[in-house]
Image (tube, rainbow, N blue to C red):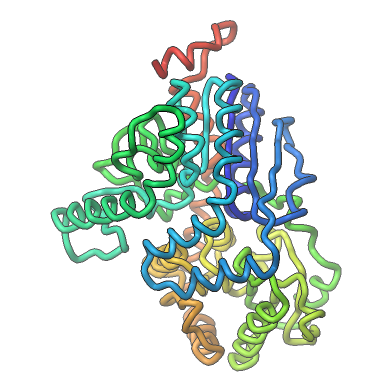
Length: 437
């Protein structure tokens, strides 16, 4: 088939689609992946390992604008207002351009696959009569009577059902003006429910989360499938292991790896503040640490025998050498740390990251997640000491990692798509469109 794909966001939103594009291309499909990224100069040189076509557009935010987005997000306590602010500041400026790309993909494709947040592609698919696959990078967005929207486990199925109805109603009222504006341009009726019509595709919704973390709920229809982590091991965009790393690792006990990922502030004052938080926490805990930040030297920090500052490193190569990973609770970093068999400490900036922190705590491989707006070096240090003094947490993390190593999220995603739409060799490729109609 000819498959069009579209994603938007930071590295954690882009890397899974690079992995899936490669898997689909290797399976014999013709793939065109369009990326709208928030980081300028990062993805322009990215290449598909299997020859998929990749088009990159950059929604370049200045350091000041990026800091405003981050600060606004983690200062807002209401999750609905938080999502609305992120969409207004970081999605809406590229919405029309994404819609144009989505319609071009619709004109050239038999099947469209999109980041669950990217309503322009879902609208283009619906208007063109094409099957649409949404890829959910978190299972928090999938309703079920068996789980609470906030991860609580005390209300039972009737309470969960009521709270999901309330959550979906408020989400739709808060955000529907975005998709409805585009739908009106094409003469389409207004959206009724954001979750079931956009985020969770009725054709196929792939939950890109390890089954060790996300169990398939008994009331999910067959159109919702947990495929597993869409991983692209040692992605070239993460750089190589720095030469200083081997000597640092060999000079003492296993360190804590510290990264805020795409939520590290873009401006130097913000980076300095974040580096001070992480550095003081490591020193108070008496722990060796590797701290990831591109501009640590410009912020006035220098490596020593206890702390090594690095610009980047491939997570799958470095995480297994660490005693724990302190991170922001992004979907990719969370699953990479879990796959490495090490416990986590989560500093959540937004509600989705709080969800990942709660999930890791539920699994017994992390303590209570911190919130960026209220975390302190002393509180971080105390949790680092508790984690290092709880070997059972590491044992549990290693057991989960061993099970994850037998999973192949990309292969399962490709298989699920093939079950529904791939035609036998020599068959007319329009079968995908006929299936949709």
